[in-house]
Image 1 (cartoon, rainbow, N blue to C red):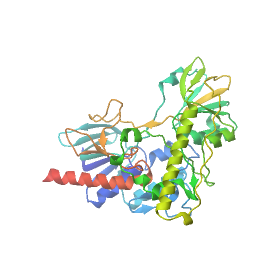
Image 2: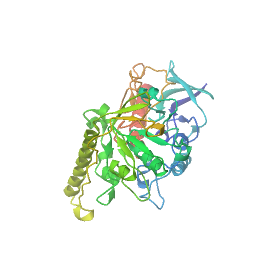
Image 3: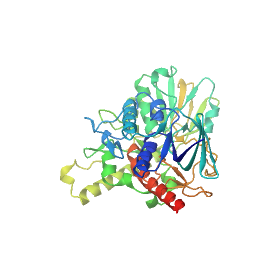
Image 4: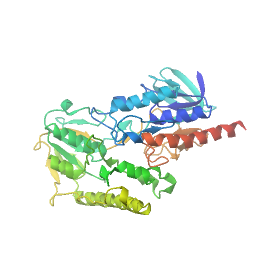
Length: 417
């Protein structure tokens, strides 16, 4: 059995950022990665995917994008190279192609079992991310056997789909991007829409992410939110990163020919049933978008920057049919594939510790895991709104890692006293 003061599981942006901060504090550690650096970016994304954040917002401790397209959006090979280069520059002590099979408590700290042997550690950091397993609702069991059912993790490009129509369930970032791409391939897409967050790609001449960054919205702390559990479940923004910096919302998709229906409520005998609340969902998304834009306008005025940016603007409300579709025979639409863009969850099947709630979510306070038998010894990184609104983004890993490395270092000093 090998020993390290701290074991970090995962070598994506969160694990690498934590590694850098632990090294700065001279805390010996290792990173255990099931594949290679940035494994999920490398193996679990579709071919055309680009980051939703501009390149200038790709920042890690002591390292940032320095190319010639700061307002562009990295594709997946570029993201992988970015993280690989960072891992090399910080000389991260990575044990790659090593799969963790279990984590269990030890008399002192934890035992991490892998397919390459065991590790014992005093402190443990779970940096495996929040998107390990696609969430597929139970109603998927009602699909006819003639219809293929997949998740975005399994999707690569339209050519790999069966001929015929496609239904996409979920209209957050993933759902709208796949709808646009598949519709453009010549297949008819039906998009099932539930709760979503609508924003423009550009506002007053700047990227919406620039505004969210400069106004401090992305740095908002979890302690400042009244209902943090609700905030952590808010869908991702309806955004796409393209060279043209287009806005991708339901109006744009309808213009492209996508059929928009309400939230999928049931499947039986080849018939899909949809909620009649589509208009309400869209009105709420429009309302929240305008509140965001109001806040940006107020910030611009407060900082006397009106003359330096474009004029305020508002966007056409989401167009919704007066008589929405409530049921649909899938065969009538020749739907041969359903893609469940209904979110993801972490995979903690290997974590044999009493730290999960009844829904399988890890209990933590800003990334410090509730581990009663050994408080201050277990940490998690990369979850949505973990410590800040930006926690699950590349740009959020550094600040969160700084805070948790400080906590971890203090716990080690306390234990040694």
